[in-house]
Image (spheres, rainbow, N blue to C red):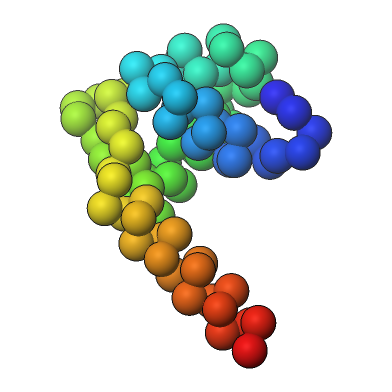
Amino acid sequence: MTEDYTLRDTVFRTFLKDPSLGPSEMTERLGANYNSVKAVYAKLYEEGLLGREGRGNYIPNISGILLQLMDRLEALERASR
């Protein structure tokens, strides 16, 4: 895990690079606490950034990711006026 990103950001970025990683595999990859990683997956699911395919199996929710990016861009545009 890098110091530049939060655990949430690190998990999400790592997951997008390798969507086959579930919470257990992510824990091993990052050397993080399992319960913390599991909570991040749950939060990303709640935020609409991940979809769920059965227990412990997640997929990127492309439409949710794009909508969040669009919202962020709009907020940046408003702030720069």
